[in-house]
Amino acid sequence: MKTLATFNWGVAGYAMTNGKKTVEQNKRINTILKVVPNGIVFDKASNDGKDIRIPWDNIVKTSRKLKPQYFNIHLIENQEFEIWVNPHKKGNKDANALAEHLSRVINENATGVEDEGWS
Image (cartoon, rainbow, N blue to C red; front, side):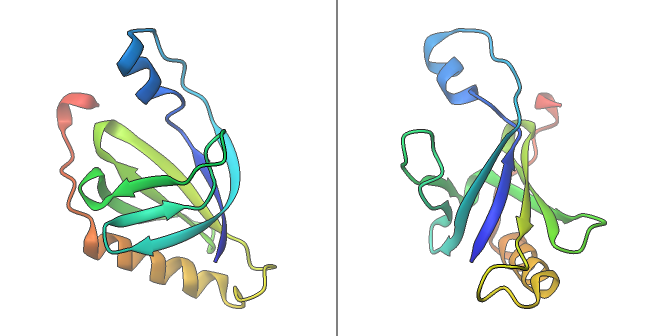
């Protein structure tokens, strides 16, 4: 299914490896969200065209938005991103029901623990 993800964590992984200060940024990515046995995958969503893979133990929970086709995925270390299920894409006829279903499936499989020390 085609989704739009707004990632709110910027370059945290890069900064952890090189010691540079991070700048929080928002980035919109048109991608396909896949639920796989090990977690979720955003198809070809990185800057270099590779998949972004998020294992279940990095996902804390999801939360629904007031807008019907939206939900947030909350990750460990106080990171989160917003998902929008595009109702105009083929196969997404009932985008609200699809967003609700994805949110529920991700919540059922998420094993990450929210660490208050990151807030």
